[in-house]
Length: 175
Image 1 (tube, rainbow, N blue to C red):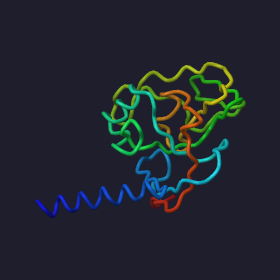
Image 2 (cartoon, helix red, strand yellow):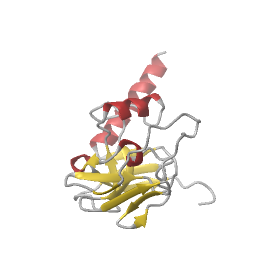
Image 3 (cartoon, helix red, strand yellow):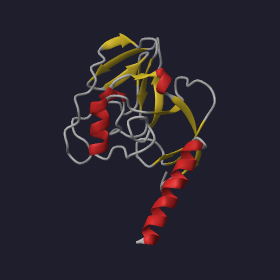
Image 4 (cartoon, rainbow, N blue to C red):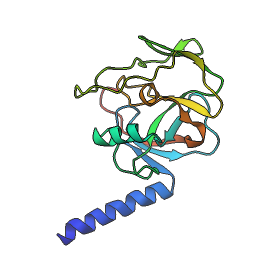
């Protein structure tokens, strides 16, 4: 029992140090799995970003369905890693094909009705056709059609975005 408690304590301490030094771990399929480092500067369109979910209902769903694990965000979850797909002033249009940003369809951005385990997904954010207002951003996965991102929980505050850069990526065979 002491060995298990010691191992758990060491693991938690290591994760705490990772966080303090700006390292983020991504174990989900929505972005390349691996270790990322917080980078200086304000995020720009196309940058990889770390973002904490603020909405209680979506945070609860993400934890309940294991889309996110407990972590260091103010709501107690780990941060999401996504692409800053749309920034203030960008025009977005959503339809059955996905989300177009400034006239270009974002890859694999069609909202799905069910997740990979067949559970119903929350109704997709109805962006319609509009301009992203100041202070908000659209974050999307660009490599996984089932990414839990802005197509479900909507626009996120720019202030919550932190730019990240990959440090070590785990590349599956065949990629």
